[in-house]
Image 1 (cartoon, one colour):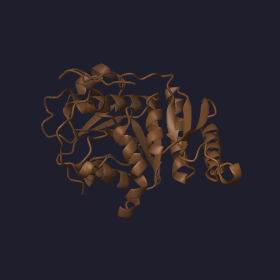
Image 2 (cartoon, rainbow, N blue to C red; image 1 turned 180 degrees about the horizontal axis):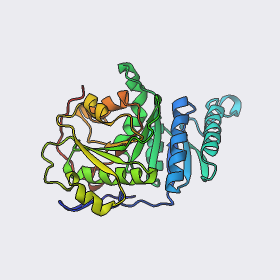
Image 3 (cartoon, rainbow, N blue to C red; image 1 turned 180 degrees about the vertical axis):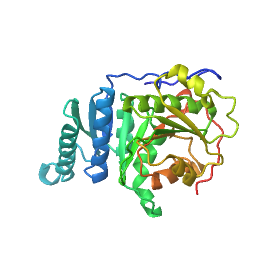
Image 4 (spheres, rainbow, N blue to C red; image 1 turned 60 degrees about the vertical axis):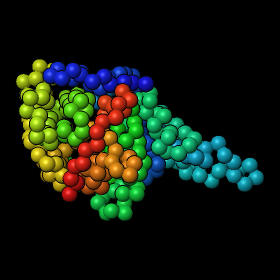
Length: 301
């Protein structure tokens, strides 16, 4: 399984998340929905940018089961149809990408987490658009992003207008300082692959002495990256969206979970409900080191 090693304080992060294998696939979850197909399109385009194969995964607990009189379970034709449709969309979007499909037995979260172990990125669609009760539909995306060993990109249903030359955005300071380093590396590499600038939002008020606030240190590692910095003190979901969106990709740490054993922090859940740009959740360092950070409470309104 890939690992992420913390970088000593004051040093630059590695060019990308540790353990990246360019031949590892991008995994995308396909459920037959419109938002799922949007995720397939985004994942196909990302596979082109990375030169990576694409693996389309559909999980069903009924795979391998038999129906009445030994006939296939009634859910299997729908599952096969969903993967076939996703395959067609992927091939039309990125004809040069090697695409494979797989029906996986089991619940979606467990199946996607298993697939993530051998992937370089996981991509999921999400249907929520702001209504409080719609957050129930985001449970798979929340739980996978909260536990995945690899970055997870969540593609929303609604994405009005285009982003044009808008920059990619990295949000730093949402957790431990060591969690900023893999986020910065992921966002910088994504921006370079896309040929777009990068905007770094600093939500921590005491990062003046950190490498992340020093443009010169960034230039040492990524000399071709167009970079700008913006402070967002006392971050709320609304302030983050106002400073960042629309953007081709909003990158941040996946967080450490909240109260009552929720899979994601309050700010992350709020952004999943309201953000109309794709969001990348990068695993925090403690997820692969086994250490537990302190819990932080951040306003969400």
